[in-house]
Image (cartoon, rainbow over all chains, first blue to last red; front, side, top):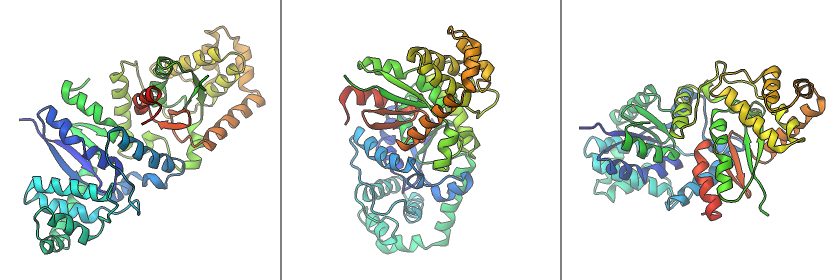
Length: 200
Length: 200
C-alpha cells in the first residue's frame, strides 16, 4: 500500500490554508491519503534566514494581493486575519495532541482552525479559541486547555518541527510525494500530475 | 490598442529563462505583445533584503531540483551554468542597446543569451560572449563591445532597473498585465487565464 503524502503547513500561512482546502481531494483522486503535519515557520526561518512574507519590501505587498487572488481563483473564501503574521503554536500543539487520539479528528480540527483564521479572522493563537474549536468537535474544553500546557505535548511539537527541518522542509505548504518535494500552493497541479504519472 | 505586457527578467534567473520560452506565445494567443525588460536582481535584492535562491539553506537545494523539474514539465532544454548565480550586467546592457535600434533584434538576442546560459553553459557575463551572440544576429562585434562600455548604455540599464523597482518588481520573472502583477514562472497559467478573462 502506498505511503501517505506528507502535507506540511503552518497554521499562520495563507498559502497553507489554500492548499489545505484541496490536498485531500487531489490525493483521493489517485487513491492516496494525506498525513497532515503542522510546523512552525518561525523555527524554520532560524535555519534558513528567511522571514515572513509580508515583512519583505515589495514582495510583502505583492503577497497580500496574491493570497487573495489565488483564493479567488479556486473559489476559496479568504480574508486576512487582523493580526498577521501570527504564531501557530497553540493550534499546532492541539493538532498533535488530537492526532494521537484520532487522526480524523485532528484533521477536522486543523480545517476548523484554518477556517477560523482565514476567513473567520478569529485569533487562533489563543488557547481558548483552540478549546472552542475542539469543543465544536466534541472534545472537552478543559482537556484541550490542559493538553496545551502539557510538557509532553510541547515536546511533541518541537520534535515534529525539527524532523520536518531535517527532511528539508523550509516553507508552507510543503508536500512530499514518495520522496519528491513540492513547495507552494502553486504546486498543487504539479502534485496532481506527479501522482497521475509517477514523475516526468 | 492594448498596451504590451511587461516581462521583467534577470538573465541569470532559471525561472526567467523558463518563462522566456513561453511568454510570447501566451500573449500572442490573446492578441497581445510583450515588452521584454531585463533587470538586475542584485540591485533589487538591496531593496528587498532578499538573496539569490541557491544561497538559502534548504530552499537552495530545493530550487536546483525545481528548476530542472519545471523545465522538464514544459519540455524546455535546461542545464545549470557552471558558475551560478552570475551577473547579468553585460547581456542586459547589450539588450537595451539593441532595443533602441530594433526591438525584434533585442528579443532574439535575449533568447540567444538565455539559451547560451541555460542549457548552453556559456559564460554570458563576458562581453566577448555577448558580442559573439550578437554577431550571430548580424551585429558587428566591435559595435557591441563598444556599446557595453558606453556610459549612456550603462545609465540606460541603471534607469530601467530603478524604474522596475519603483513599479514593485522584486523577482524574476515578473509579469505585469494591465497593471496586474504576477511573480514567478509558475504564474504563467494564471497569466494566460487573466488575459482570457480580464481577471477573476
